[in-house]
Length: 159
Image (cartoon, rainbow, N blue to C red; front, top):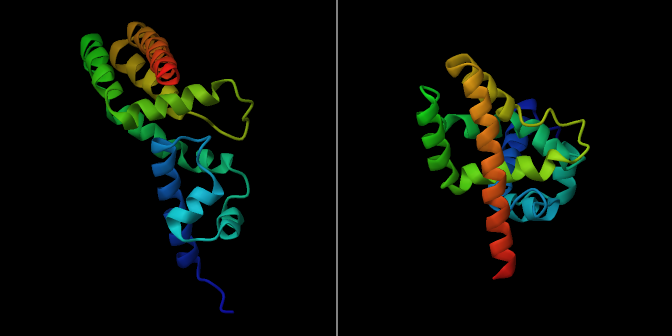
């Protein structure tokens, strides 16, 4: 069997990561599995686990991409614009999926994940652009989002 080139391996890894990101944002971390990734990519579960031996490695590798999805939606020009852009973003499934993922892993002891650079990055940008009030606003919006997502989750379970 011929050895794969570094470029081929990199393409395969990126292909798997692209699908993992898609699944993280649609079905969620808990539902994503080596089987769902294998079915979607056509790469065997063993092939996927060769590149990503632990499921949390997907989060580690995708942390910056996920974070950028989060921050790109926000407008840091004023507190009002930040709040408005946050609310608009929360209406988009992709953005709320990022926050659901963040909240689902908050209590986890996942030291291998430099997790959610996005939240820290958003706070940092808010602090730079809007000072302490901007950072407080981000904290408020995170709390508000947690309540909204919890109530949606409760409604879905009741239905």
